[in-house]
Length: 161
Image 1 (cartoon, rainbow, N blue to C red):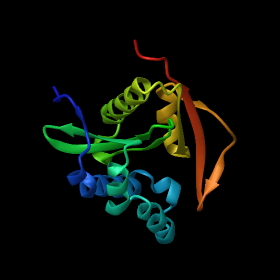
Image 2 (image 1 turned 90 degrees about the vertical axis):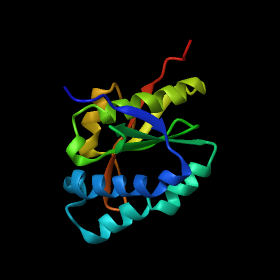
Image 3 (image 1 turned 180 degrees about the vertical axis):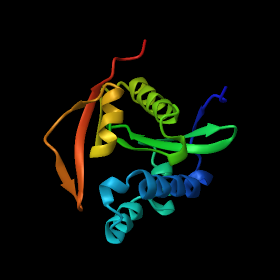
């Protein structure tokens, strides 16, 4: 039996590992989206550098979390107080093992506590099935962002008791 996944709030010292998890998830897990185009990959990864992550960690309107399995980081997520899910990335070898679901449940809980009625995410086409499985619905027509096709999804969040 596999150990359970622990979700923890990210700390400023985690910026580097968060950035590395995102980079690996993009390079390996999102290859269908970027088709191994070096310029596209570079632009996508550049938006999640350690400096950018540090700025998010310092922003009181952002919440970043980390999924740990036996104290090893296996995934990361981010939400903003406006209801945007900025990202949910999991190390490719941990796909379909519960880390993404646990990260999203925690992010949604953070939003609910703040009274946010709806979560929104701009997903890749390949990632959209994961979010739909979690109850997200298509919100608007597909869009393109610097060569990446995006699917905008949303989910109503019942308020916490």
